[in-house]
Length: 132
Image (cartoon, rainbow, N blue to C red; front, side, top):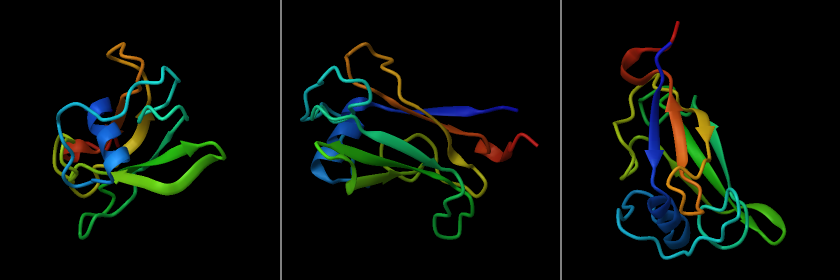
């Protein structure tokens, strides 16, 4: 099975979470500072979580997939300010296609060592390869 992994830069994700933009994400520096807390994408001092929704349909694109980011708060996770990312989101490589299953695997490592998590999402069906 071939799996393509896609990476969203922390600055892109943090900017989307803090400004509310989904389709026009800036590719420059984020407005939030890193808190050093594992899983804190937007630098607000609370852990955030990313949930893969690989069978999400986007218009006529069945099972294109998406990743939803829920923000952490003093009371825990909240749906307020939740953001959805797909391969149709600016800053995400590729284009959403049927049976891509984008988001079938989600990882939250600090790849760059900047004390802010990067979002890495797998797309097992990218380019028609569903592993079957």
